[in-house]
Length: 110
Image 1 (tube, rainbow, N blue to C red):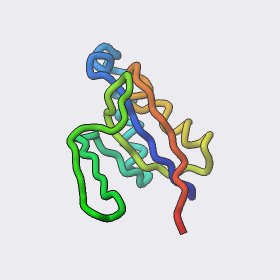
Image 2: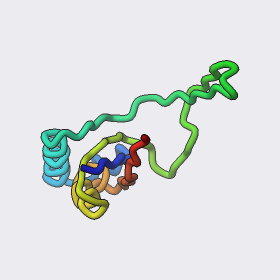
Image 3: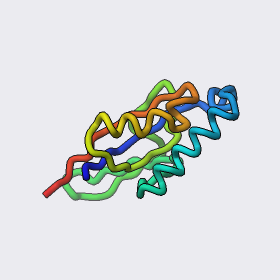
Image 4: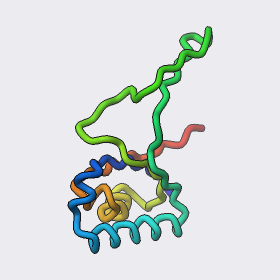
């Protein structure tokens, strides 16, 4: 079955202003995705890694990309197609608490 990478963006203040019943239902959706085998996690502090021409590893603390909202978490889910993946994440915490969830098809490498 195809896999999709999801990136959830959300601000804690927006989460807090979302009604508790909506948040509880959203966390139940996360639990359902986990029970289906999704790998879900909260984003920690990022580190950039580079190794130009394999001459030496360079690291830098912090994200490479920036966005209007902080990254809240990631997941890898399975779905029959993009439409099903969208349906699966449309009720998770970031989607319902004034944030956004990106869905990226995961292309397998040979």
